[in-house]
Amino acid sequence: MYFNQNISNEELGSKVKAAHLRHLAFIESMRPSWELEGQKFKIIREDLKISRKELSSYIGISDQVIAKFEKGKSVRSRNMLKQSYQTSLQLIQLKRNNFVDSIKK
Image 1: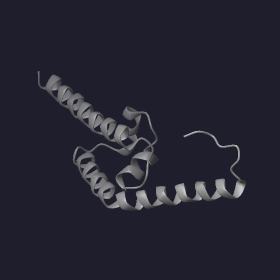
Image 2: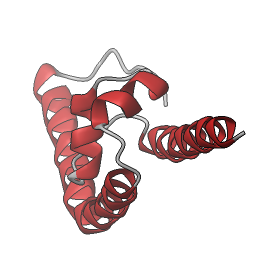
Image 3: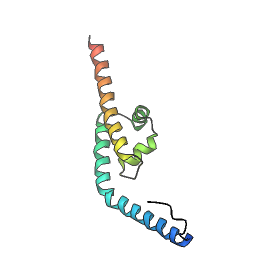
Image 4: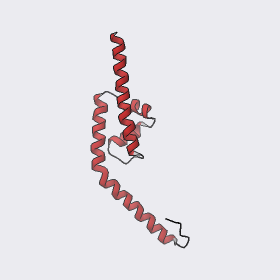
């Protein structure tokens, strides 16, 4: 796509508005699957007794973003966050298991 200098402000405004409406429609269409995904991750995190704050320190994001993710709300870089979330849960669990094993020795 190239920049058309002949486009009017009204045309540009309507194109921006249309793009925004498409984005909102996409978010609404994805919300049910995002909510289900977030609930699954939250259950795993809570079963491991890991707080959002602890998890956020491993991922390097705020715990509010994790809360949004778990509630199925729109977050930036969802796939990257999902992978970081999953990997961090595994690392925390491994770290705790190693600690318990070292105490038993």
